[in-house]
Amino acid sequence: MWLNGLQVAGTHSSIYEAYYHQVDPNGTGAIQALDAARFLKKSRLSDVVLSKIWDLSDPNGKGYLDKAGLFVALKLVALAQAGKDINMTNIHSEAPPPKVGELPKVPPASASPVPAPAAPGAAGDWSIKPAEREKYSQLFDSLQPNNGLIPGNKPRPPPPRPHPPPQHAQPQSNASLLEGLLDLSSPTSTPANSVPGMASVPPNMGSVGSMAGMSSMGPTPAERAQYDAQFEAADMDRDGLVSGAEIRDTFLRSGLPQQILAHIWALCDSGGVGKLTRLQFSTAMWLVQRAMRGIPLPNTLPPHLLQPPNPPHAPLAPLAPLAPLAPLPPPTQVTPTSYHLVI
Image 1 (cartoon, rainbow, N blue to C red):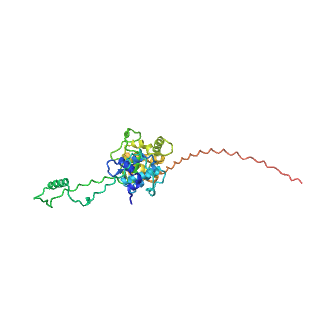
Image 2 (image 1 turned 30 degrees about the horizontal axis):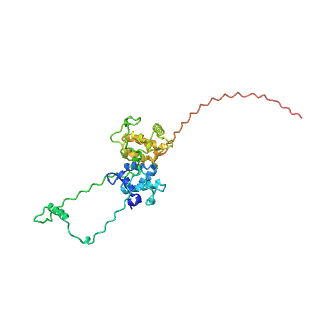
Image 3 (image 1 turned 90 degrees about the vertical axis):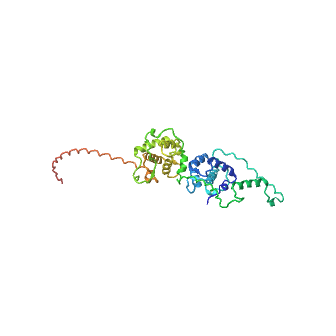
């Protein structure tokens, strides 16, 4: 059962409304994942927390937020900023207004004017005022009456056609949000064909297929060494992990579509923590190279690609040849000795 957005906002409904008009100024009723992620990142919460907020705000995996979904996301942001647990049990609990960038300025709520009491006898006055009579007469004449009558079979104008519903993205689990976390829409100044080690992108790049044929594949030792060097350069805080912001430029230089880069990220970030380990980054870059060559990406990643490679066994050193045995000395001649028994 979905929630009422105004009940979620509580006493801060005017602030929630102002935030909603910021992120959906045209009132489409559908806030795409990329726009929602950019907006929510202004809260300065971690990627892990924002990922959990997205999952709770879009429980059906639609890939976008409606107005009520945005209100839920804003309430969860407010709970996180107040140090409270992020769950739907606390969705109606009191919390300060969420701070997503600049707190919007809203006019103070004015008291509703009290209607003036009706004059005595006004409720029973059914007479038509002269101005109203003139308006209805013009309306009657516009219907082209015949002998003072309007035919009942006069066709009515067709009702206005409803606007088609907005086209929403297909469910993408967490990949849509990760597009926003990576901020992949900003252009990069370095074209793909000028990046060392990256080939030009073919026209059929970035398709997604099965993982058939990948059961024994993976980066070669030379490729892993190259990806490890890129990982060291990207890991600015030296925590052994790289975030979307740290590898954004590396991903963008590939020239692949945003959806494909987000799919690769989701495949390699198997724990959904919002960061990649050295091994996960190496696998991600290997998938990027394959996608650039037009090789379809898998829907799921074979487990061996996220397991450390077995270290190669060192070859056994050949045995040194045995030194020749020295010749044995000739046997010693034993001189027989006579023994005398002394009594």
